[in-house]
Image 1 (cartoon, rainbow, N blue to C red):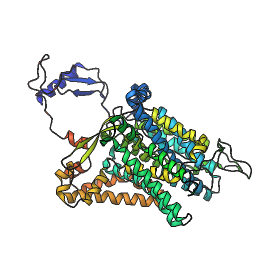
Image 2: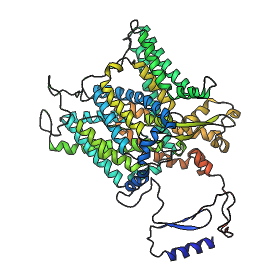
Image 3: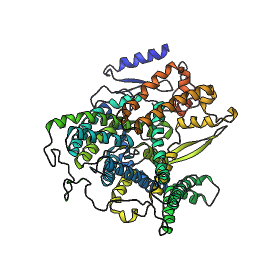
Length: 588
């Protein structure tokens, strides 16, 4: 230690011109070199205006060309094409579903057409300029609830909704840009896997429930004959079952390896097309709920009996002058939108950028938020479109679809380990381009049964549970013989009762979040409780010891890094021509 300090003082003395921000970095061999600035992580405060944004640009700029080229390399092409086809349907289904809910909840201010346009335009802009192009933009349940809050507020203020919505979005855009410029994304470093798993579990739960709810609703409503209800349920089960089976087909001994990989990569597309063909065979005998898309490219809102609003929103009103006070009243819901967007965008980005996903090109949290605030939000405001944000389940599904896994066998059970991810922008851009083209593909899309889309919805929710530690630990509740527990690290180091207690706390938080979202009167406070999960995690130190939290709230990679590593002998440094045992030579 003394020798290390002596070398450090000597080095600093020779570098008298160094700034205070200079960092001294010691290599494993014991040699010291200097860096012109501190080695800050992507979620560290830089102390400079726009410092995090500049660092994101520097981190991602070297990969910009490869972000477009890597998708078209021969070894990646099949996975890229299958991902585009799969995510096109997977992202189009929620756009249509949420669009219909927007139309009902806002009395026709905007609807399915506007939601598809918002998803397409926002997604292409985000894919082109964002720091993490693997995040898929779209509508979410919380944003739907908050949009309805804005609609109710406009009615209570007796102002036109669309101009009021325009100013709300513009204020939200301003707040979002300020958050990015002042490095406030760095607050996300206080978010641990405790919060991430709850949020990801909530979104997965929404997809699962919203996927299966219409199928049960057919039987309860009594609007369809029993035969039709049964046939829609069978199409739902067929779509989900076939997609699930084919996604694991590469691990079977059937056919040849290239064919197994082909069928696994196109599992959802095969399930969707075959289910739609099956429905078409019996179309004359059974009437099904089919997908409905407006074939005319015109806004939903009518400002008179015969006239619809123009595509560009008039911020000063259509039928009457918009009051100046309404511009400032819009600040109130804009704050809620900004908080919700901050949490939705960053939590999804944190989950996508998890070390367990094995991404190599680095994140860009500040850049993602800046692109959303400076580009996508103003575009949606001017065109009068619902807001799109990074959607967790499609984003996780996008990463999973582009990942090649190896199955790692454990003493009890197994774990999927990613070995390669095709990181690029092309799939995201082309997925949203196809979603925009869906507006012109109505003659084809009308042959898609809604029950088949619900099956895809349900499959996405189930598939996104992969790697969610909350649900991994929930499944332990079904194993009653301890000898059959999978040998996860926390099981080896902690009493199982403590593991179950930690899981129970997470489950209660998940239930509260889902309840707040579902109840209209409490949906306003949903984002604030979601933000409070970080505080709840800090309060767990009064229930669990630091050692217990280290095993329960850490990534598998973090646990591996806890393994002791051989350290260099600083008192007996090797000569320049000698090789350090256990290491390859490094040139300093």
